[in-house]
Image (cartoon, rainbow over the protein chains, first blue to last red):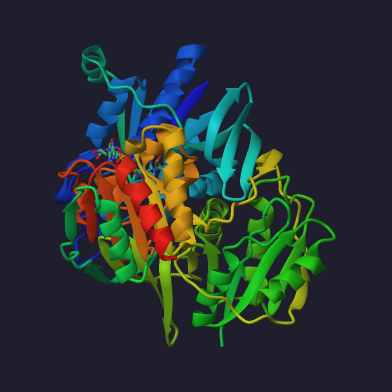
Amino acid sequence: MRIGVLVKQVPDTWGDRSLDVSNGRMDRDSGDQILDEICERALETALQYKEVNGDVEVVVVSMGPAEATDGLRHALAMGADSALQVLDDELDNADALVTSEALAAVLRPENFDIILAGNISTDGRGGWVPAMIAERLGMPCLGSVDDIDISLGEVRAVRVADAGSYRLRAALPAIVTVTERAPEPRLPGLRGTMGAKRKPLTVRSLAELGISSSEPHSRVQSVTPRPARAPGVIVVDDGDGGTQLAQFLVDQGLG
Amino acid sequence: MANILVLAELTPTGAVADTLPSLLVAASRLGDPVVAVATRPGDGAATATELGRLGASTVYVAESSDVNEVLVEPALAALHQATREVKPAAVLLAHSLDGRDIAGRLAVRLDASLLGDVIDVARDGDQISTVHSVLGGAFTVVASANRGIPVITVRQGALEGSLASAEPKRVSMTIAPSASVRVVIDEVVPAAVASDRPALRSATKVVSGGRGMGSVSNFALIEQLADQLGAAVGASRAAVDAGYVPHTSQVGQTGVTISPQLYVAVGISGAIQHLAGMQTAKTIVAINKDPSAPIFEIADFGVVGDAFAVVPQLINALAARS
Ligand SMILES: Cc1cc2nc3c(=O)[nH]c(=O)nc-3n(C[C@H](O)[C@H](O)[C@H](O)COP(=O)(O)OP(=O)(O)OC[C@H]3O[C@@H](n4cnc5c(N)ncnc54)[C@H](O)[C@@H]3O)c2cc1C
Ligand SMILES: Nc1ncnc2c1ncn2[C@@H]1O[C@H](COP(=O)(O)O)[C@@H](O)[C@H]1O
């Protein structure tokens, strides 16, 4: 069984994330780049499956600028067997449509039995990339699912939506995206980190994949930072904090 | 005026999802709303009538036995077919689980622009633009499509209002059964009937509890305060992880993003990922026993104190006034 895991570097949500006001793109210098936690959970899901089932190869796949290699090394240190990077120096220009086209091109010849991904990334994308890849590869996509059960030729999982919960099933190969209920990612140990340096990491350029234009499908017209909030009133409870708060709410017409 | 195509999602029981009214409001700002829907065989007429009651004047209906049995595919096929027949100036969907999947696939099929998670839409001549609240509301971005028919997903709860009822014109479409690429639905368990509380995404007031509540039974205090205020109940990720509330109540970066009139955070520290989901609320109130909790930095009114003393007093004081 070969499992592909889509991983992506994003600005650390703990840091000061910012947009370049001139073009609306993520300001890459505004904070540390780390592997998105949701991708680590997808990888953890694959690694746990491998631990239980043995004969499984886990390949992490990412599209991003040269620095994205760090994220891939981290994934290898967690336990992935090899890594595949689509190098795009103009990545900031690539929207979900272009990203999915490039990733589909690199995934197609790999013939993974299953492709795992995060359901939605923290850098402002809407979680479209996996569904778009599924559309391009003609694969079923089980999006935002829990309780993933992979067996020979089939995957089952549960999707909890607003209207109810759906028990789903699809034939492999399929794309499956995990939610925050997927297992907590492991921290790479020293041995993992050392071993990661010797694991294969293949880099492909967009040109090699035959993708010429990374012209985005939409245009940013304006970017406006939110005005800072005015400082509020903070009281220390001396036995009447609840009453004071009630008064505030009533004064605001919110009580 | 140009046609604006709107996808109506149905719940497992065949009811129209509550996201539709705001989609119709958004569509009416851009042109003439036309609704596309996929129903179970035999349900088309009744669903069209219901959509008319919600303000749809034209409904394209595809009846298919795949509905409720195959994930997403019937609605995608219906929407794609309607796009061919209606030739809309834009396609609008809810930014829901299904809406997102369908929008992504449709944008690939049409090789069209995808403008996602918008909080408003506008039109100036032929130009359609969309308003996005990004990085947890830190920036407002206005964007427009560069290519093809823009496919737009609208954030749930972002737009209010509804259209007047209409006597809908119904057009039947035929869609092919979905091919081998299908996700089979083995079972659907409809969500428990919603309580009398307002829905989190569209509520004007929200009371959220965090890890500081300490237990499921203590979390009942949050619900009592919510009921006193007529508010929805929300939570931090730590409270969800601890099992105090279902994950659908999670507010933040990876939960729901809301902009209510009032947000009350109790026993929530105010981690940056939590703030990302609520910092655009009009009025923010915090109760926390730690004076250095970051939530106080964005609070309009904060009480440094023990939630188990402050909240009961607050509930009593509010009850005494009403
Ligand atoms: C990628 C990523 C995504 C994330 N997404 C989200 C998200 O969507 N939403 C989210 O909320 N978090 C999210 N988090 C987690 C976030 O970082 C915090 O861990 C989480 O918000 C903390 O929740 P909390 O404030 O309830 O708990 P804590 O940080 O533990 O805070 C508990 C607070 O309760 C107070 N307290 C304790 N007892 C009392 C009492 N008796 N009375 C009053 N106050 C009391 C304490 O002083 C403390 O401030 C995400 C993290 C990552 C890395
Ligand atoms: N550039 C990328 N490289 C690898 N995987 C990606 C990339 N963009 C998105 N993905 C995958 O798709 C998921 C959803 O991302 P998004 O559609 O950007 O919200 C992520 O969690 C990743 O698993």
